Image: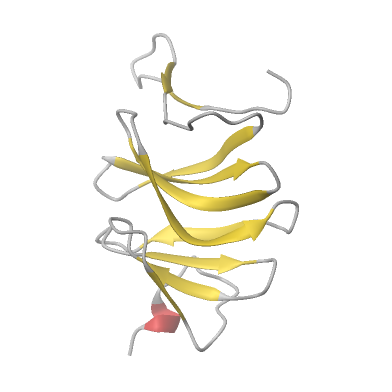
Length: 129
């Protein structure tokens, strides 16, 4: 469907794609994008666009409800760069819209804004002693 996107998985051995049916509720416009696997392969981190905003989301790789994490951001603001920690216990996120960096809890959705901006969250070295 034009303007809408879903996330699918495809078996490594081949076969039909399976839609990961994340529960969106009644929305006119949505887009689930940029999925990334957690280190244990059980959950996905992705951006969920809805209406004029987006937020990071965590969902089970088997589908079902999601947990929205971090601050809500305006759509068309450059998106975010986010990664799980190597143990999967946290998510580091950098938001293009305001240049802020956050450490987020993928279970509760709570987060802490960092006092330093990390424009490359692909590495955790900048946040550890």
